[in-house]
Image (cartoon, rainbow, N blue to C red; front, side):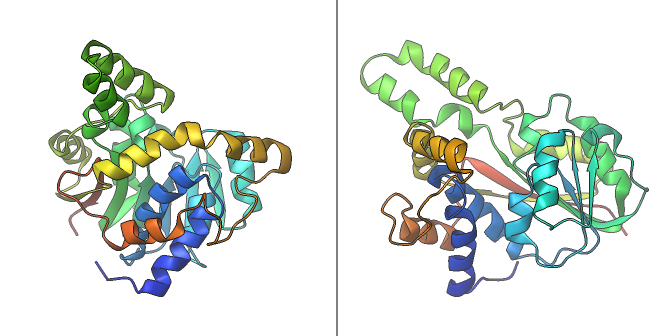
Length: 268
């Protein structure tokens, strides 16, 4: 992985924090920085393109094919003019040619998919020999290291902490919050030969993200009224905490991080 310059990191933070609620933009900035350190072989397959914001922030002229099952976000992705091709389909039945792609990415998507194994099988099918699949997911610590759980235990309400964890992950639509060995087994079954991983997003950052779900309610109002998550996209905006995000992106990895970045390769 290639090191990023300070200017590159600031650009990443601008593209995320100026367009998303802070708690989400902070996480996406870290994740974008991980992909920015890698040379992605083209064409690139983006599993779970969504509204296309992440691809818009990350890519600059690369040949990228985006897939998503939902029509409305794909319309937003189309308007961003990032993808030469967008496909509406389920990830387990991608209407794409075998061994077509040089690399594939999936950013914070696979944790939401019940029965994720067929999706991984399809990614392996459409990758060329020697191709790599890069993806991010929250891991098992997302269930146990939540700020709300710690607060409940501190006030002697430990019996409610597990309920809180289930509630928070339910509203986050998390299904697969698994340790590396579970993902390695899935990827091996799909046909990948080697798997590397690094944990990122430390516990303190998770707590900021967690509390941000409530603090970010005004952003939802701006989105409904004006079509923008952020009305004042400036480093001087006190609600953006730009410098704090930059520091996190500069040093994202943590052995006890609450999210994991995977690199799975097919043999050549």
